[in-house]
Image (tube, rainbow, N blue to C red; front, side, top):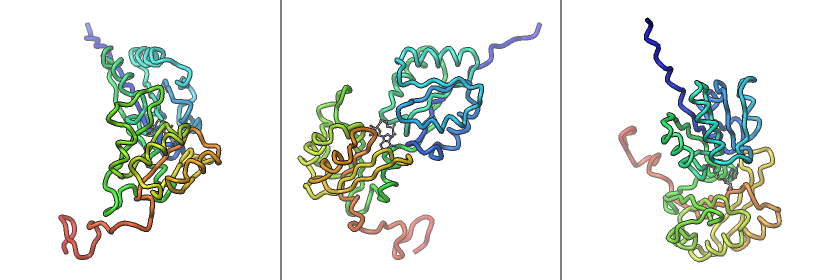
Length: 259
Ligand code: SAH
């Protein structure tokens, strides 16, 4: 008799969709979508255009109205019936994506999974602003944070405390609380610190607002922006300040280039 072995299930793939522009998904993420039987995507911030990469026969679910058990049971039953399941997250799945709670369920049920990174909206926003977030002589640190909302934040991560570093800071999920965001940031940064808000970076309706801490809240509100926006603050946004890196300095040699 032939030894019939159960086929190994395909791992569930968590893929970063990138910030919105369908060209900003990775090639690997796009290839996973092309092969998928079941796709669960975060409808609020993942462009439907991305779904054009999927096969016609693929079953596509918007996770926005779904609960965690509904999402994970789709993943588990799909994987167990030999289907290729892709869970598409906005930006990179490692940031504010509820990745851990989904992955924990899969681990508990012995369902394998893999993660394909994506372009975070923090980087798409920096690109829209045409700015480097780490400028020598100005800031060598980037903080990703948010104001607490329904999800609380630990007390030692208060925006007012983080702002004391005067590093470059990317504030997610907080555009609707712009007054509070600015109030907290002003506890550490001077009011003339450059600040920006990027609404729907990389989408066709992207809006870029620049200013300083003292006026950014008024500008964001005047533009009617209260969601889907990244707030970035720090002197690195001032394109005129900073030193050149040593990397390309003529008088400086390193392992790949002699002096
Ligand atoms: N994992 C995502 C973040 C999800 S949390 C990432 O890596 O980008 C959702 C928040 O991300 C939004 O409230 C907003 O602050 C930010 N965001 C997501 N897409 C955005 C975009 N295209 N432009 C600006 N901000 C965006």
